View 1 (cartoon, rainbow, N blue to C red):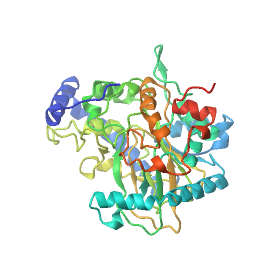
View 2 (view 1 turned 90 degrees about the vertical axis):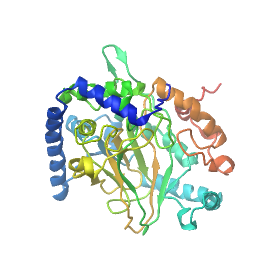
View 3 (view 1 turned 30 degrees about the vertical axis):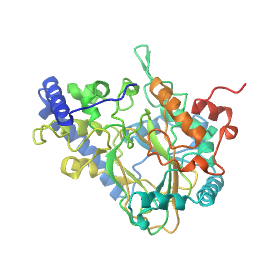
View 4 (view 1 turned 30 degrees about the horizontal axis):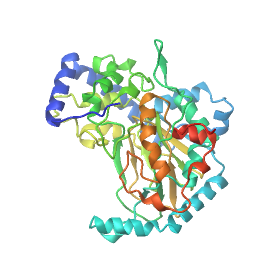
Length: 416
């Protein structure tokens, strides 16, 4: 998949807006319909949240494994675009992994690597310790990604999507390639800027790239009620501007698995649980009060910002995820608005492994080929900053640590 190149960003934005408005002359009226409908969803979610009611679906991994998740739960999951899956792993297993990761980063003196990096960048020493660690290839991460349990959970999530239509297969939901991501290890009492509300997986590209436009074809044609966030058509064909903050893989859901108990107030994840909120975001940028060379702050190769200036009705629904136990996992649709709390008021570490759901497709196969040398050499994967801390780390996972499933998910050939 060729990367998207944009030489003149302001001109590309102006041209995109001219094209999209010409295709949708009544863009103002359609936006008002969308704003009314999605605004009501946001207010409903806010009312439930304030009343102490759950707004993010929760399901037991045991029900996924036994194929007994109810149709009502699936419908709510698809409307909210997110879910918490309980006891994907037993708490004792998650605790062992957490301890092994702590030993891995301590034994290999990650702090010294971070201090050297800070000195090279003229950063203050206190800013050298991150909350997100550029660690990808510890044995617990590799084992969790290739586990039977997490693979089954992600196949379940992949299959929520329409992966075939009109005789065309968009992706294989039963194949779960590895997208190696990082760790979060957040100590208590740390107040630091979290992540403001945003969407991943493309920003200005959503309006500019022709395949992205096809993903949202019903929104841009005005028939927005037909827009299905779980329609896989064109999703694996989109092109992003190369960036260290954008994913080169098509992920059906982003996700993380808890290594420690954590909940609201512990510097945790927040989401806007409205799966079709992207319709509002897309049409908002076409309105006349937005400058012609502006897409409500969206720029190529960055996260898509969700700002109170433009998207205040959506932010009313921003909700922290519920209390998590070690071994639970949370997943959120690739277009879902999310953020991270600024402060951790809890009493213990808030630790997670970032492990998303991704299906089999040509786009993801191409990334696997680029990612595989990173695993073999202990380097940072292609989508991430080239810190390469693990090249000399003792205890790093290697080929001998892989199960047959782990080999397949990393794109390695079968043994023998």
